[in-house]
Length: 276
Image 1 (cartoon, helix red, strand yellow):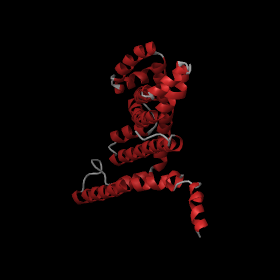
Image 2: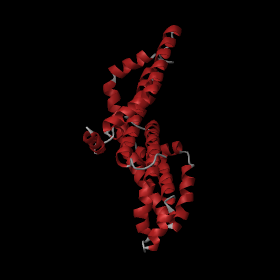
Image 3: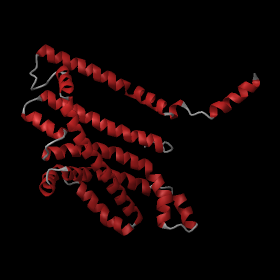
Image 4: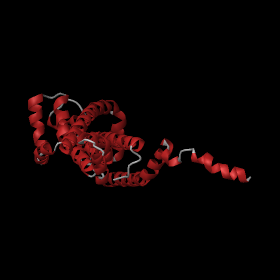
């Protein structure tokens, strides 16, 4: 009996903890969103009750039941519009991440380049992006390009800034040690600074994906013939408030999907890093 007791910890030591498995992570996520689900249900019940009691006009504030009906009966057109918007978000987000990472690496690696780029990057960030949307439509037409470009100019900044913070906050003792053994600045960048910057980079990426959703909708508002933003604008002109809310729900679900996909990637590959 004593042998069984002594060997059981060794057996358990080789098994992954439930919290580190995919199933454990999913269960933890469900437990964490449970209060939000309960609160949402309470709000929906109150909303439905107020709409029925006061008989609010559907073109002013539709009841949740009316919105649900639109979600079911017009899901085909909503899904088609969602795929168009999702494509814009995905391409724009990936390009903005690449641009942000490259800018951060250039600033960290080349001091003179950093002194030239950083003030211009901050200055450009203060330009109201919604004012650029009509210009991009004028220059590049109504296709995918202006939406992607608008997403990039909106979403690259948090990626660049957060990664730059991570690059510049690497352990100075480790950097000094690398220099004493003859490592070049490029070697220090790749072996020390970039690995250290990954948690900060993921924080910037999670901000960027939310801005990418906003950028896609703004671009479709400025000029588009498809997408959820176009559908919202069309429904508003037709005073179909229920369709507006249905499209907003689709956008919110799409944004949550992208956000939690990034969270899963962070948990899967950078779980060793402390949460920022």
